Structure formats: structure tokens, C-alpha cells
Length: 281
Image (cartoon, rainbow, N blue to C red; front, side, top):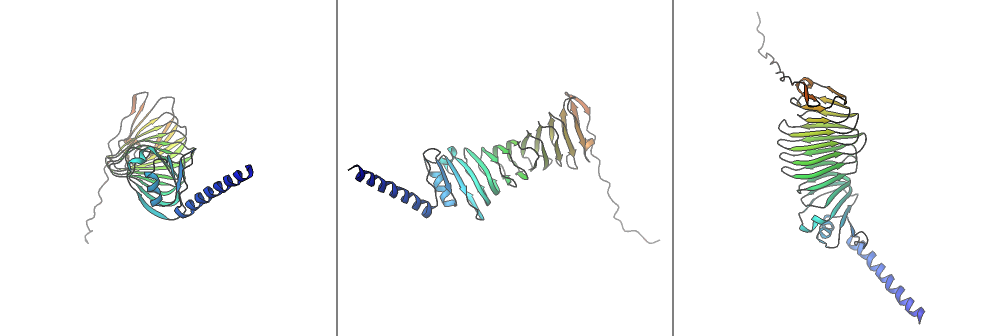
């Protein structure tokens, strides 16, 4: 009798496993586990279904296929985590998630408000779209480009990987607050109307700017102020060694311990070349 019951139980388990495998093969969605409530998807259709699900806490978008798609705005997504593991994907996100982690992604366009994004894969390009506000962009990778479109706002862009190379481009009337926590090579580009603040907390960080920036150097740093960065400010204490160079070096205001040590010189106007044709005499 006991052997019979065991045989029946085994048959039930086998059927359950078979149904689960069939679901994965046909639908392509790995059901949420009781422990982690993770769902793995590989298409937009599956992603939307997972976003609408009440049980999913974490959605992993995983594919090596070249794909371009829009992530729609769905109310249920606000309490879910999205993880991108799609090296050839170009995603345009309109939804608000608990967090967004970019482990692998060719390009990610942020159109949802108040998201916190974590860039963990090298070579990723992120754009915060026009008029969009992002809470945070945390970077633990290198060869990263972050663009903030006009009237956009990123509360915190945090560089948290040693020797990372990161470019931040900030458009007209946009705002970005950048904190360098580990030594990095940071390039900042943008419009003269952009509001860009940089706090450098890691020694030997290099900051190159071609747009006006306000820099607070808490550790030794190299600051290169190129053409276009006229009107920048650099603030530090006497104990911090900040090496300032570049074409716009003299057009920056420099303070130490709250005292101005260099007043910004007015930017020099470029001499106009005489294009009048020479006359034969």
C-alpha cells in the first residue's frame, strides 16, 4: 500500500515538472519562485505580462537578440525591480519601477519619472529624456555615457568604480548633480544654461569640463577647464591640492576655505578675421 502511494506521488511530481517545463518552452517565461519572486522574460510581450503580474517582485529581461522596444507605463510596476541583461537591446522606458539595474544593455532611454538606475555593465549608454526627473544614477562600470536632455534632472549621478571613465552630457536648462566616490576620469559636456554640480570625494580624480561647472573638491584632483566652461567655480580647502589647467582656467572663480583666491577673468573675445579680398596695387 505504501509503495502504491509513493508511486502515485511520484507520478504527480513528474506531471508538475513536465507542465512547468512546457510552460517555459512554449511561453518563454520562467514562473516566479516562492523564495525570490523572480520572473525571467525575453520579449516585450512577456515583460508586459510580468509587469502586470501581482506575484512578480523582480523581472529579469534576458536575451542576446538584437531588439528595440518600448516599456509601457503600467501601474503595477512601481513595486517591482527591473534587471536588464540584454547586451544588444535598445529599450525606451516609460514605466516607474522600484529600481532599474542595467547589467547588460546597448542603450537605455529613461522616460519614466522618479526612477533609480544602477549601471553595472561596461559600455552602456543612458539618456534621461526631455523634462524627465531621475532620482539617482549609480555607476559601477566604465566606458559609460549619460545624457540628460533639455529640462531633465538627475538628483544624483554617483561614480562608484575605481578608474572608471564616464562622460556626462547635460543639455539646455537641465540639471545634474555628480558625486565621484572612487577615483575616476570624468568628462562633462553641456549647454551654458545647464546646472552642473560636481563633488569629488576620491583622490587623483580627473575632471574635464567643456561646460560651466561648480566643483567641490574634497580630495586632490586634476581639473581641466576647456573652452566652453567659462564661469566655472572650484572650491576646496587649503589641505586639498587641486591642479587647474585648460583654456578657460583663468575664467574660473577659485575659493579655498571659503575665501576667493582667484577672481574669474572675463572671457576673451575672438578676433574677427578680415575676409576682405586683397586689392591689386
